[in-house]
Length: 516
Image (tube, rainbow, N blue to C red; front, side, top):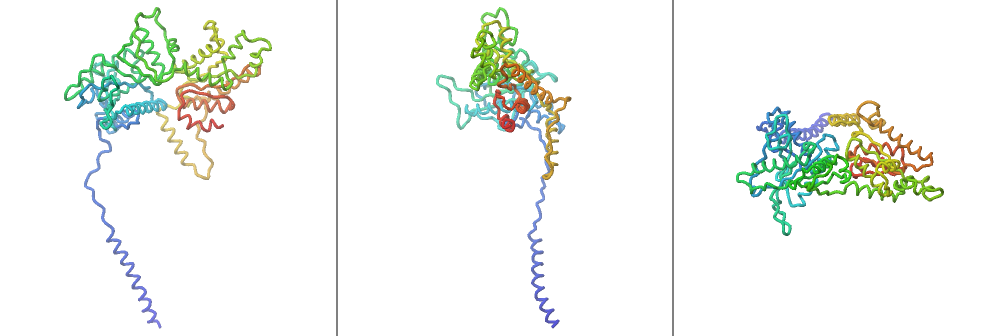
């Protein structure tokens, strides 16, 4: 019995052992040795010119990032990222067109985003003009003297101007308009921080035009380009702010405009009348003064305020009617003006940046348009006093959150890391900054401002006068406007709110505020 049982167990054991053995052998047979790579690992960063840059990237950010990489690798070329000479324009048959894009040079998030958008808009324009980048993933940089003259830049006195070259699309070349000369084969776009123009922008643009023409002539290689005319026109996209446009008007007033600089203004919106009031004009004016070549590609503030006031009238907010009723000529006992005045909401509160010429000029355009709609014919002083009762001005300083450029990344990183520590079962952590009375943030002031406007409205209504019917949030910085909207909407949820410069960021971030 035992011997038979042992034989049976052995019969079953032998096939199982064979299977295990075959699996072990196959494992070693199929397990191939990895390749041994003889190539050594290269350096993490190799200095090369031109500078690496995506087409959507802020050109100044691309230059600074490249310079930082060189500095981190202790490359001696870190200080020579921008060259005093243009890269050779090889194969150029004719002199290229020269274009300068004037942008804000600040490091803050709103200004960086604006530079990205301006570059994207220029790229779209070149695409529609059948032009393509000469180098899709690179950008160049030119170092100029601080006065933009042809002189050699000093070590501690210079202006860096990133630039890129666009050429005709070989598959879809541009065609000349009927009766016009064929366009140039290439266009060089220089990016310039508008602060480099100083208080005399038109004069410095003429100096820059001569400097760039000189450098382009030296860059044509190996054969010279067709001779660039001495009066070649410099095309300027900008300025980005009404402050620089005001300085251009002042240069024009003293006779410094030239026909060789064409200015295409897509962003500065202050109207001509307000701009002329923004500086001390010559008296008497110059005779035969040369006007600057200015083409606005966007409506000015005068047109915008008129349309906005018309929209407010459709929503039963008419400050001009309030001015007429309070002027004394129409206000009589039992008159419709008197009966309506107590129940109306014709006052407008305008909240804007105090530290930008654009915001101050925009409010002046509002007041001037209200005075016109009210048909005021008195002196300017009386007009101002009458309109100021119905257009209420409140202000703040730009950068309400108090966040500085070097603090933004670290603050966001801390918040995201803290948020990651929060488990699913625990309650959400409030990562919003505290509204302290000290520090850089003005959020505590913003709360008090909202309370102050609400008390002003209540005081008018208690006295039987017209209250605040609409609140306008004006300014340049979209992030500031969103903060103001949050503070006021939570304090006065049933008011009519309006703003200028509709921005996609406002639609993305204001959803919760608008719904509340």
